[in-house]
Amino acid sequence: MRIFFDTSVLVAAALVQSVHHQRSLALYLEADRRHAYCAAHSLAEVYATVTRLPGNQRMACDQALLLLDNLRDRLTCVALEPDEYYAAVSAAAAAGIIGGTVYDALIAHCALKAAATTIYTWNIDHFQRCGPEVAKRARTP
Image (tube, rainbow, N blue to C red; front, top):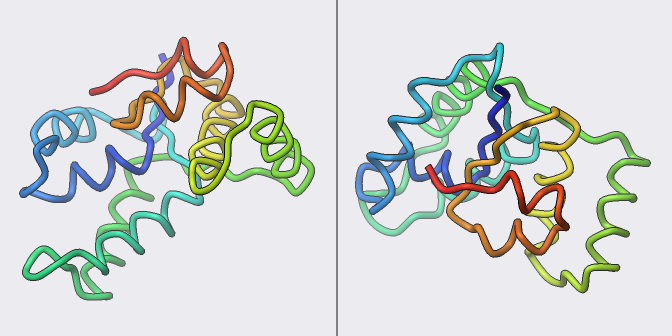
């Protein structure tokens, strides 16, 4: 079984204050590089999110990089080639996906490239819009 982590689960696993922390962290702690994946793009999304949180939730840059190091140690990062990137955006446009949800479509294509059997996300509705092959794999932790 190959599992794939959406950014929403990775951020929740890192933030004790998140309502999804316990379930996300438990799943993350079971993961290893042999069967667990994330999109390379998620590294930037996690960094952007945790360094812009309000108040004492915000991580300093060096803390955020330590988090990314841990993600890279535990998960295999999957990146799209330029032609795959364009195909993913084209498919999103054909599905009527607009705005920032296109980033979830890119993550979904990375999950398909990794041959993930399950995509863990807290944004189920975004992934269900990415077509039946993605929708049948999308689950919450």
